Amino acid sequence: MKERLLYVVTVMVTATLCAVILSLIGAMVFGLFSKDISAKDQPIFNIIGPLAQTIVGGLIGWLSGLKAGGDIAKMPQPSQGA
Image (cartoon, rainbow, N blue to C red; front, side, top):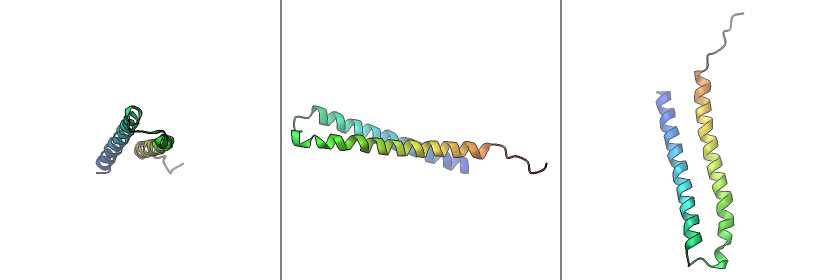
């Protein structure tokens, strides 16, 4: 049951990460080729970069923590007898 939950959460985090990256790339491409963007709108691109790094870094850290935690749980425990 725990393995199934770990799998479902991992898939959901991965799908969220892909959706965030695709939407950020789409917004940047739209902003680069849009004629409606004026010189006053350029500071928004200064905000998108750190925002993308924060979201992607957080999701990747969460995903690696889930996978590392699952691997640690599978490791054999040392015996108590000496």
